[in-house]
Image (cartoon, rainbow, N blue to C red; front, side):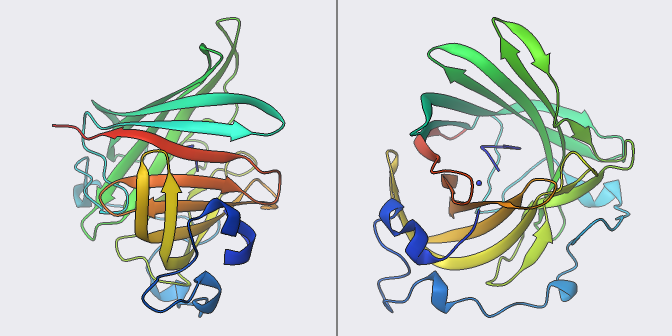
Length: 260
């Protein structure tokens, strides 16, 4: 999850059962009517494996993008469920800590813990920074999985500037339908891509009901065959994630406590 799980794909009809409704009530139209592509090449955002050269002076640890706010002290709790496995609980906290990334940028640290039956099964330190335009960049993560209290793997860890790893964008400053960009790139480890699919969804999760929700299709995996939907509400961040191609898992926001 970088921060609360990177999830992406399909059409509005595929996720209708997970939403209160699709689209904006004002026009009765759903995401499937809003798929005119934007000019990705004109966005200035990274796409595939291309290298980017970022000036650390243009970045800050203050992250106030309305769809992905990260104020130190923010705490988000998610219910992660899958019909084929036990329910999990993910707790994501925006820390007061920062980390100087190998590419020279100082990033905000978001710490996420995942529990199953009360036992810690994985944790993650993810690193983010916001550029002058308002794009939130994803600069890497330290991921660990546990069994009986012992670390079993750190697979999925990467850091921009180390071993050829390149940063990506977790949230654009001005998302528009059809906008495409990479979220991360570390060959053979992390190669996720994103596509803005709609700006007018509605979602219902334990924390509440939301309108005018941003829907992003996320293509996960090295072969990019895993597809998920992620839903973001202004002023809150990610509220819902739904697996589409590899199962029927859901990640729902249960509580959100903003930082001071």
